[in-house]
Length: 100
Image 1 (tube, rainbow, N blue to C red):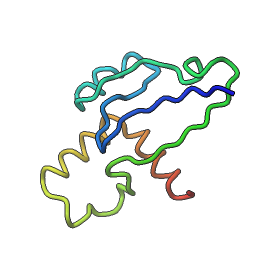
Image 2 (cartoon, one colour):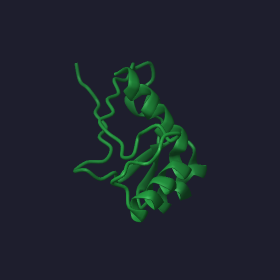
Image 3 (cartoon, rainbow, N blue to C red):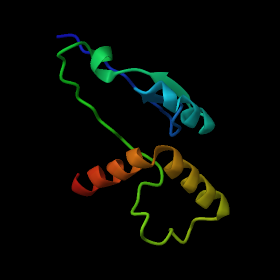
Image 4 (cartoon, rainbow, N blue to C red):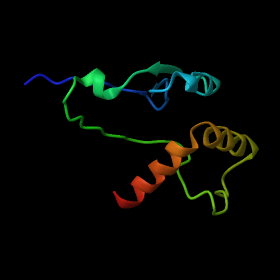
């Protein structure tokens, strides 16, 4: 059985972001990543059940709690930028990590 594999990011840096909504392109580009408008369902083939594995994301945490003491001003600014751009993703990544 042949398999299709899509690798996003790599070597500790996210360089490509798969999005379904072209209106999100500017948000992704502001984070210095390359947006790729793509539906995983269509990329894998209609009716294919995808196996998705998410390895990591930076700054996935409960934002209601205090920042980590090791965060400096640059870290705080980056955290705010990421959460403002892809906050829903980060929140759901956090929720998924809690049960893994």
